[in-house]
Image 1 (cartoon, rainbow, N blue to C red):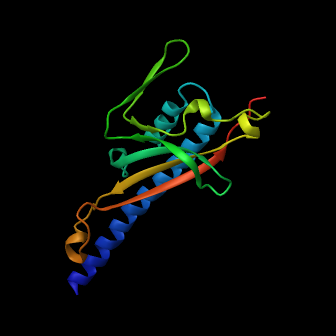
Image 2: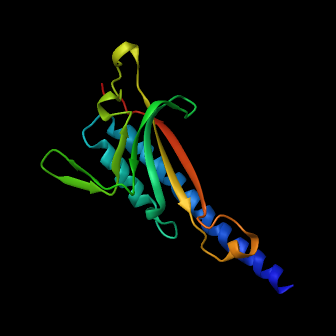
Length: 175
């Protein structure tokens, strides 16, 4: 009876840690999408987005487990349109300089610039080819590793499991 009880207890604890990570990543992607929408096509918007992700993933989730952050143009259903701008956490760092000389360094390196800041449409009058305000999305990929020894009882991938969460928001218009 004790092994069954122990397995159930470890399962509950592991589920709690995994569920916390899912909620933290979902919140971070929503907040980052809002930050991207407010930043629009402004210089350094991506650094603000990445800083928001960094500040929103807190313990017991671990920001070091973020694989990459994708910033993309979205349709009204939240699905990606075209290529995304992809930042990988393990690849290096990016530094942005703002007006007034302020610099910000984030622990993400640009891997692919498929949706550059300059191509984002946040003008109420519209952009090229009659395109109006963009919906901008942010997808965060995260790897949850086993916290408890439950894997030893039920089997499973020793590296844990990877999931992603994304959110999209309409750009804030500039008149």
